[in-house]
Image (cartoon, rainbow, N blue to C red; front, side, top):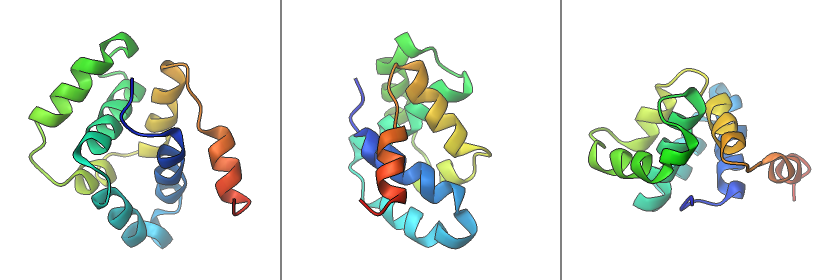
Length: 108
C-alpha cells in the first residue's frame, strides 16, 4: 500500500488549501518526508486525478521514483487542485484522511 500515513497526507492537504499562508511550511514538510513517502504522495495525487488506476498503485509509486526530476514540493505545488487530487486518491484506494484532518483542525 502507501508508504505514507493518512495523517501526513492530511497535513499536506490542509497546508495546500492555505497555500498563500502556509507555502513555506508545506515545502519544508514535503522536503522532510522520506523518498518513499514523497513517491507515495505523488502516486496518490496521480491516482486522484485519474492518471493511474487505484490497482496500479505500485506502478505509480515506481514511476514517481524513476521520473522524479524536480523537487517533490515544486512538482506538487505546481499542480492545480493538489489537495483535491490527494483526497480523491485516498478515496479511490478506500482510505480517508478526514478524521486526521479534523484532528489537525482541532489542534490534535
